[in-house]
Length: 457
Image 1: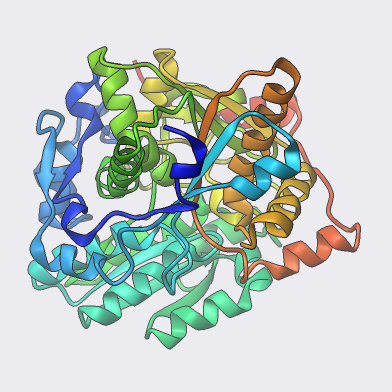
Image 2 (image 1 turned 180 degrees about the vertical axis):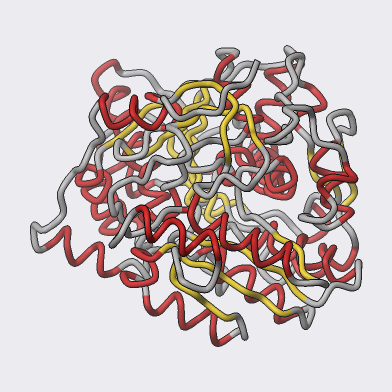
């Protein structure tokens, strides 16, 4: 089909929206290793997980066989407020780059939370409400997840307690205020409000925090307060499941015009956006129906895939959460105050880690200054100010398009634009003022953290 017949924005109708989430694990020959009890080193059971997570979410977390899980009608109705989201042909970027490549991006920033996080937040809040809970606790890095969850909890009249990584709490006051507008309480982490927070502060005075720290605090509060459960915006299988609406819509839009992508690119922190975007494409790859080049892009300051170790590790700095087998830099690793706050987790989704380990996808890391160069270039030609997290994918999409320019290949590139960067203007200011630097951990830094991995047979 000629380029002229493909619109700038490909929309699906409400009737074409997914009615079920897709579970990648159902098609994986090598299933991700189970979550493990930190004391017994045995696979965690549903009974052991229900004091932490909502009952229905525990079922989704452990389900490795059901390919499609129906999206409840109440959630589908909520989705209609901002879904289906557009798949955009980046004609202006293509022209600017003078590349023969065809570039598409799935834009998830057209809701008040400004990101894809609302897809899972509304699902997790729904199941918490259905269970009759009083509220939920969580952590947030850059603030997209905390913002999305505060919106979802407000919709279902649930209490929402957010532990926000301290550096982001200070750098992104406006996102913090959006959370408070929707009724959430927001605490900079690590804090003096929890035992684990006090311990971390005593061991690391003046720390800017990490997602691992914030997770520890949120889990402690959830388990000590009756009627509360902990919810998470990335990493977990249940989150990748909910985010599969991104990929399902993307594939349906491409199929509508007979387009088959050569490569799919997504930023990677814990794995929610990447896992959701690639889900149906990876499914085809796993079933042997099609092949795609799938690229995870992470910050050079927190390179879990590219420099991490595939091993069981704690998901939190306080070492109170279950162990997960993943690519990790070690739970004690605290990255530099990188402005892509949503990509500062020390590990990666167990599902994506297994897929990467099996060679079904690749990964690359990029420096922060080059990421913001790409973000600025994209904003000037496509008219959207992208989130720093998304801009990692933009950086590699541009690089791949320029390779096509050199070789003359007409490859089709699809990447995920997870959200907007209008609450990240402090970071843009530092970039424009020449105050942004690239802080990359040394081999010694990573080795010291990895040396503390739990000993698991």
